[in-house]
Image 1 (cartoon, rainbow, N blue to C red):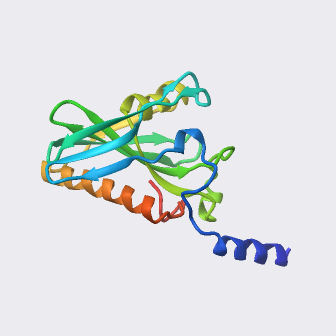
Image 2 (image 1 turned 180 degrees about the vertical axis):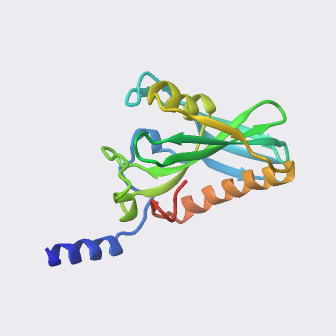
Image 3 (image 1 turned 45 degrees about the vertical axis):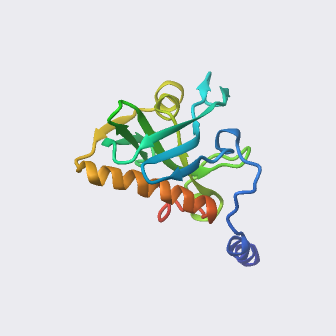
Length: 188
């Protein structure tokens, strides 16, 4: 038993995070982000159409946003049934009426499911899912049948815009230098 624990501990230390794995189809494609002087352009915004949580049609689109036009940020909470914990993410509302959610999640390999204990043991990479509300919110409400609560954040427009750009920069950083998700220290 001691040898098994030692071998497992050594293996988790030696494993390095990577963007080159056999990813689940819903997390295979990372968004491409370009922050220019006046605009932010995001390619591969996820916009799947779901028949169920396991049956979906992948789709992506690109969009540009004028910098400084986030007018409100929504804090979204999806409680986990029976665990006393929740997944949280943000949706950015723009002056032109568009919304863009960003969710920090595990990046699952094919066949993987989330386990909070494994999340402590360097078993999942971290990713930023940038998607359409019709994807990220509707998946949770209509197909997972989870409760979802949306709260407007009390902040200034300037801070809302800083938060949006900070999250995009962080998404770029985790793509350039992959990181492990950790249930307690590096999560949503």
